[in-house]
Length: 313
Ligand SMILES: Cc1cc2nc3c(=O)[nH]c(=O)nc-3n(C[C@H](O)[C@H](O)[C@H](O)COP(=O)(O)OP(=O)(O)OC[C@H]3O[C@@H](n4cnc5c(N)ncnc54)[C@H](O)[C@@H]3O)c2cc1C
Image (cartoon, rainbow, N blue to C red; front, side):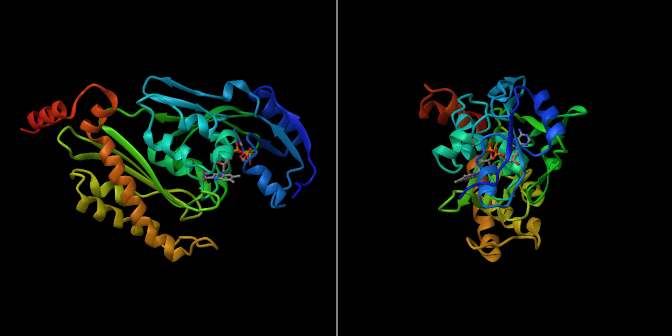
């Protein structure tokens, strides 16, 4: 399959990208792993492509203070390989579950969220983590919270001529744990159901904050406030997690989509299962014992048991 013909311009900086878009219109292209397929299927015919893929300043992950800034051109493979122990586990693992090695080596974080495919993984994760999106455009720079960034099916808050420059996520402390679980399409690995949980626990094991989001089910990734709220103040027992996960059906309402891969009814039935898995895994990661095990390599199981016994007295 061949895409329709197009004019091509390569931008050397964000300012130049914004100016070229103002002059010629069309679409930005980064990794091309969402845009080129839709052009080849003749679902998109932008006429002009502005290549932002070689703007160096938009690449890489930097930590500053209590957050990580992920440049829009950072590939999924780079995110999946991030080694900082405070980097959110859900994001690292979700990036590693995207497509196949080719897709992860070419596809970018910015392209993934700007495209806003309802079956993409990263919008769900960024919603649950409370990410902030940094944008540059003809009127300067601005920032948008994840809760306001995804506005509909393949729609975002990005305005005309605006470039997404980075996504910022909070660093994970010892009391936080996050996880992503997905029921994937066996051919493409896109999410038929994707669930992300971001949990904070107290030293004594009660959940003090819980944020959950789901994707693949509705026209855009969505937060699941009833699920998160129902766990606050409780211990993360199997029963409490199962009861919380069942509430996803209230949050979803009647807006669940079906397609040739899975009916709406099947997705609805799978939603509590995958929300439950994300909550369970995030809960394990949020436990301080698990954190110690991850962070302090030479602590033996006996020492951990003893510390836990004394703390819980
Ligand atoms: C076979 C296959 C399997 C896949 N499986 C998965 C999967 O399992 N999970 C998943 O989440 N994704 C999956 N993807 C999608 C993949 O993650 C893409 O990399 C990603 O969706 C788009 O990133 P890109 O850099 O290729 O963007 P492009 O294709 O270059 O651009 C996509 C859209 O975003 C816009 N855009 C790109 N960057 C910017 C920017 N910085 N600012 C403003 N607009 C921008 C473009 O104008 C275009 O409209 C798959 C793709 C393929 C081909």
